[in-house]
Amino acid sequence: MKLVLLGPPGAGKGTLANLLKDALNISHISTGDILREEMKNNTSLGKQVKQYIENGELVPDDIVTKLIESKFSGNNITENGYMLDGFPRTGKQAEDLDKILIKTSNALDYALYLESSLPVIIQRLTGRRICRNCGALFHIKNKPPKKRGVCDECGGEVYQRADDNEETIKTRMDVYLKNTKPIIDYYEAQGKLRKVDADKDAQEVLEILMGVFNES
Ligand code: ADP
Image: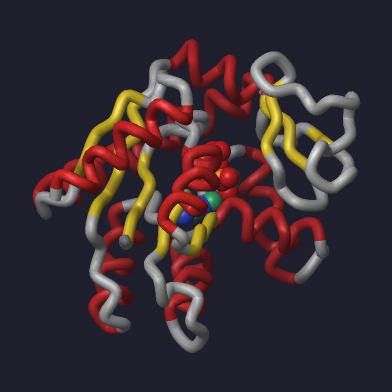
């Protein structure tokens, strides 16, 4: 299965990706996760993208497209299928992705559009917490770690992303509406778009999607 996950910040792309990864045994490629790892390791790429990310703005297209290209060429990471999360985010990225996929014989099956409403998004993002070590996701109300500030999975430090505050969330939503929404039309025109109500619980969303896959 070859998938792209689309939807506003907070629609639950990361949570769903973790469930789909296990259900379908495919690679999860998240540009946000890759860039945060670069920032954590203070690499030159990490330093280059820090300001954009902390302000909730998009990192320039060529930087992220190069990252994605490197994932698709060389190693076997996409052998069993893949799920792109956080990419493409602009029309240019969508077009460049198609070129990469054609070149590497990895054409997409579906673009899954997770639709979510603003109050749900804000509640999810402001309460979201992440393990600095293994990336496990928590939520202060919906899924708190058993011990405050400590990851249930690996004992790592649980922290709040610098861009998960209300002001930056607003910028990210504006950026999403301006740049990313047109991509929905792009995949609709290709007949690859499948919409799902992502205000629902992640497990329920997973079941709906498995139904979609089985239909085809
Ligand atoms: P979200 O929770 O908002 O979906 P992500 O973890 O996917 O966030 O991305 C966090 C930030 O990383 C974005 O706000 C943006 O600055 C940067 N980023 C991630 N993917 C891309 C991309 N494809 N193009 C440009 N910037 C990106």
